[in-house]
Amino acid sequence: MSNKLFLSAAALLVSSVTAQAFAEEVNVYSNRQDFLIKPIVDEFTKETGIQVNLVNIPDGLGERLEREGRLSPADLVLTVDISRLMEVVEKDLTQPVQSEVLEQNIPAQYRDPDGKWFALTSRARVVYSSAERVGKTDISYEELADPKYKGKICTRSGKHSYNVALTASMIAQHGTEYTKQWLEGLKANLAQKPQGGDRDQVKAIRDGVCDYALGNSYYYGAMLNDDSQRDWAEAAVVNFPNQADRGTHVNISAVALTKHAKNKDAAVKLMEYLAGDQAQHLYASANHEHPVKPGVEPSELVKSWGEFKVDELPLTDVAKHAKEAIQLMDEVQYDL
Image (cartoon, rainbow, N blue to C red; front, side, top):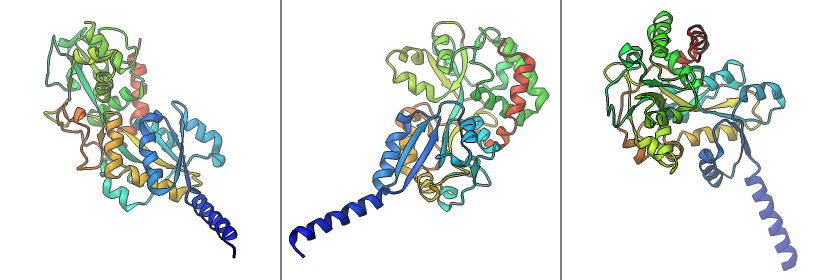
């Protein structure tokens, strides 16, 4: 064989091997912003040669999977809270995964017992308080309904998934009747009609509208890193509720394998990668959350807020009360 022919054959062989190396792919539907996950999946691609295609779907992820049915290209779904996750699971749009890696890395509290979903990060539903007028304080969710807080509390809509999850956890802990009375008390203590997002509640503290607000912990990090919102965060203090008893309610971001996944093996590899030490730290740090794998450190900023006791109520128990939580919000007319 001539040198020319030999080099040509070698080039074809290299080309073929390269094509095979990148032949595998994973299609991910996510309601998490791409910039939070792309650096991690890019590292996964470098290590495995498996291409990851991200499709951002802020709302209606379940409806889209339903509409696409067996023709859906999605292999994995990434969700930002337990309510949206369970919508997909309850519509029978996921399938179980049996993986020793996932079971070893992710505590039972943060995964479905049948393997239909696995949490990746957690965030606390905290009570923000005015740094100037209140300071750091021990507080419980139950206490927010005490008349001594009348006119001092701000929240976003009660029907937002973050507040639905908190209310569902109250139902799981105390029952329906108690939770309804709690919601009525909380509503009576609001300084203004529920509006805006979690960051807006912290701004309201800064502006003197209220002294306390419900919000997710990761927004504190986001505000501190935003020049236009840093003074909002600096006007508030993060408090982890119920440290004297059951602990603070947490929500999760999670991953699940779709029912009609075409690239199942590659998708499971990505799930296992996301549960590993490096990805856990990077993913949690990107959004100022906590890794769910024991022993993996959060970012220095998140650690600076202090350690806290977590409510160990299984999130499956929380999720099953979500519809009832929404019904209670309607009954007490929380948003009106």
